[in-house]
Length: 253
Image (cartoon, rainbow, N blue to C red; front, side, top):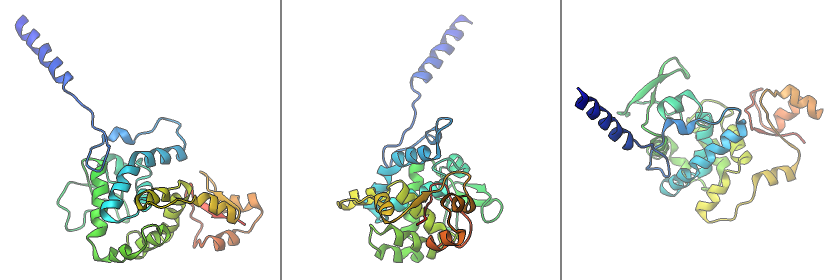
């Protein structure tokens, strides 16, 4: 009996010594789901910045390999996954909201979207999601026109994705552009292309007054803050409805 007890604890010690944790360093490495979590009390801006820091190298690598701007990759990841905090990204490592479609042979999960319990792709780690996003865009004819656009024209890419049917939200391009300009994501396009980067934030504020949308703000509250008409804000920012997203930049004056 004593020998069996000694053997049991010896085996437990051996297993413990050989347990490892996975991390992401490139598009070929893996990430544990815990890497998506943020300390309690972290601001939205800090969460997004942390996401960018974690995945910028993967985005630049995929830009070199597939020709998709790193800024677009990161902005879509932020928007579609809630900067890595959505249920779909946490439970399925799906950072781009890609559904199963008829050609998907991998694992899947059910998730409410345009309809209840739709089929979404499930990945072993976020890196697989980033690679599949690139494959998804490069392998479908409806996105072929995007690859004729300049790699540093993120506005054209954002509008092109919506026009090609990636999303049904009419504000999808504006949301991507807002993330790119707020968090300076175009600098990663410039790094890949070997070009000098000019801050979009500096350019925007040089042209006039801009307001970054904060949690809980509405067009009404913003219009009162700057003493301008809601219709003027909507017109200057090409808004078709009252929907705003946190971090979105609105031209006020």
